[in-house]
Image 1: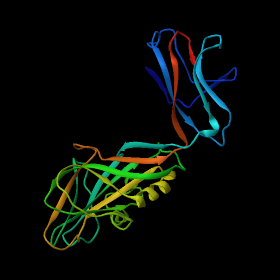
Image 2: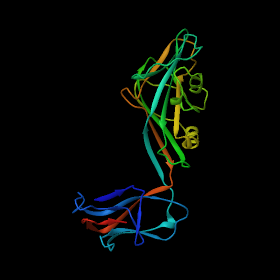
Image 3: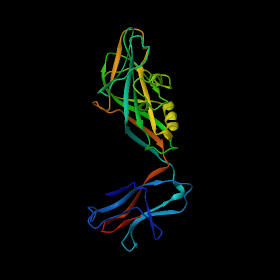
Length: 274
């Protein structure tokens, strides 16, 4: 059995950083633990030994889970999966010209096109404020549910604006869904939940986008929007069957460290972990 703490607020008491305290009616009382896992944030160039242990109400150490040489602390790789905060689509008339329009939120967004049919483009947006600014993103993938398909291939582009700030008739939004960096070209595949690795360019773009707390992609019909037979795909929306997801792997300023004791400790009321 072990404990896991991610709280980043500490109180200094007698040269101890108080991470957590067991209240008199806590369910943990009587639980035997032999390890503690902490998320350590690296700030500057730390030195010296950090000891993790249990202190009693008199601030006397009663158990140790071991030491860690802080000078060996390294930045760690972290992966997070975020659900889309916004999504939407726009369409133009049969000649794919004029002012775009957009409908109210529904269960599906579309990409569509062909000779003599309306053009549709879609976008997905994520709030990435939970990823610390200055982190280096090393991997980006998206997951969405394709709910309808008649054989269309589609492209995925970067978006330089925040789509949720734009109106349904925004030409800037329409253009931005297809004029950025090309992450995926002529993606094929049928219906069902699909995961797509957006590649190294998306990782570089997201690293730069962290300060703005938003990341978005545009989806449009590949292989020409205004030529050939009509081909389309439908993508489940936030209000639909499957909220689009973004998985980001990045190098963070902290690492997860497990401190293990050869002798288990039974938690008592008012114990302090520090």
